[in-house]
Image (cartoon, rainbow, N blue to C red; front, side, top):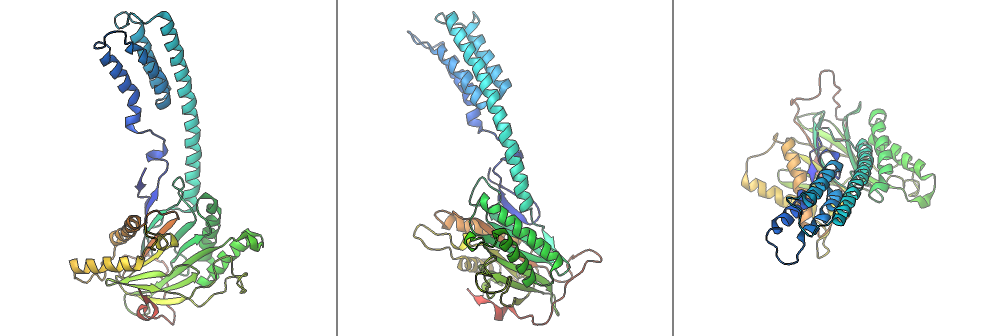
Length: 419
């Protein structure tokens, strides 16, 4: 099954189960037993000589047992035996022994269908439980938290999984909305346990910790505990943490960014793309190896966001995708080209026009563009687009706590690096 909208701001994920969580063969495969039966019946009156085409009907029940359930297989078997046994349709060369053989094959086909159906039911139950567990680890994003809108796209490297080694989240708390994008060592199902531990630590930190540094320290400590103090375990993750608050003046907002070895976020403003290159601390789980205290890192990067600005966070599965010539995917350049093209088509200033559709289209564009660019994508991919609505838009409910910017908020023009 391709992709589906999972709700909220979580745009797309692979659905390995198919619609409804079942396992269903393609229609053309399911139609083959009936087509074979019709072909034999059509050839029967036109064949001459010693061709005994009716004996081909003995193949139909086993074939039906491989693609149909017990009832349909029994129905097909009864139809075949009836065609071979009834005087009106029975060929002269069909003997009693042939009928016994076809009947035995039919009974075997029914037994085969029953066993296959039971096995598939067990597989569906197991995969449904696995899907529920993985969705509990990485649930759909909310469409909006405070004035922050978001859209996320996730692609595990292992197609049979819903969650791999990348992760993202957006949560509200007493210290304001906080977002996270990260990438643990490895990918696929073995990395899911580490992802679950880090997301759990992040969600606790959103509620309990006053600063992003403390949240990062909590996540670092979680990995250190899971590694059991063994440096050779190489249990680490990169992460980019963001915290949003209202600007001291004007309709914009302020975002604080803490990087723990993660690729920088991109700021999209008026068709221009800049890197918000926060000074990177050691990856989570490696603070003690780097010789610092757990969670120790540089000061957060503080950037003022204007109405219409969009932040794009991503994992290295995007920027390390290569084309057939071995060139890395130039994310910032491709986004800048897209932004200039949109401005030529519609030169009207898009301030205050950022909405869910814009964010969804952005992450869709990046995924389709990197898929067309890369010869193969063998790593997990996560994209998280964030935008803050202007003050005065429908915000939190009555009594909701709106965070305010502290001192030191800087303009993104000076903080970002032009791509």
